Each structure stands twice: as C-alpha cells, then as structure tokens.
Image (cartoon, rainbow, N blue to C red; front, side):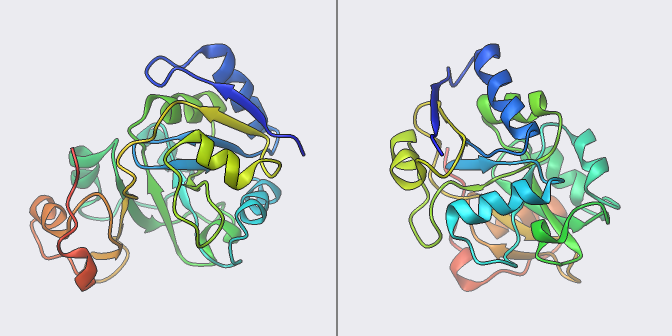
Length: 227
C-alpha cells in the first residue's frame, strides 16, 4: 500500500483535501490527521473491516477498546444509549477538547470498537482539521494515536510517516499537533466517575464540574490541562 501524503492548512483546511480524505474514510480506509493532543487514525467506526485495519496498522492487541471521535453532539445519537448524569455538564465545560467520556453504547457500535464492553469512549477533538474531516465524512470515526503499539504518540506528520508509511491510505500533514498529552478518559458508566487514563484534564477539574468526587489512579492526581 502507498500512503498518500497531503498537506492541509491547520486553521482553514482546504475543502478539496478534506473531501478526498473523507471519501477514503467512507470507503473503508484509514486516515492520519492532527488533533489538539497528538496525531490520530480515523476510520469509520461502523465498518468492522476498516476498524480492523486500524488495529493492523498499529499492531494493536485485539480486544483493546478504541476512542471514537465526533464532530457534533448530534453524532452521539448513533453511538450512545443515554447521556448519564453529569455528561452534558462535562461536555459544556470541556468539549471540544481533551476529554473522553465512556458512556453506555448503542448495540449498533461494533464490539471490535469497544472490546465487547458495554461502554463506548467518545470525545470531540478541538482541532479544525479533525472536526472538519469528521464532519465531511459524515460518520463518527476512530481516534487512536497514530503510532505502533508501545511507541510514543506522534505529534508531527513526519513521525507518523516514519511509523506508518505503507500501512494507511492518507496522511494529512497539518503541522505540529497540540500538547502531546492524550485526552483524559473518564468512565461515567462506573458507580463513581472514574479516570481510567490520565491526560490533559485533571480529576480536580472534572470533579469541580460534576460537583462530586472522581476516582482516579494516583498517577492522574497531578495531571493538569496545558494551555
């Protein structure tokens, strides 16, 4: 496979470039693109073959859940059974941005995306290229980091090219990604809201919005959002 390398304006993505990449996603391909955290891999979450291509490109162990990216809250209707208490307040405060929420999934979301779990991890990235690409594709997409399993997440297109050239269809070079810190994953399906991956938002910030405690591993306590 030959990876097509396309430059894109990070602030005003060119329609022709985005339309080409979105067409690849709709056809079952995989596209690497910048976000406000790291470079990610986008594929149609409802196309199991496309999702498996993401796993293959990364060498990711099967059964490990993927995060899903949306462009609008309306996209959640295809993914989520219900917005549990606190979800909307967190979205109001931190979306678009580096917060992933685990919410009760709809049965239409393939097991390959969730690892067979009852929750689906969803976020709305705060990057013009990512948001425009998802909107143009017209479907929620995967948003796992564009690196082989175990390697550091990439923050530049050149790192993605070094990692995954020949394994994905398109690489959108929108310049450096953001902080390099992944999104915080907060499980709202747990009895107590629980940080399952520390990242760009601290448990203290999340608890302040929720108005109740947030459980977190010790490693997450000091993690705070970067500007």
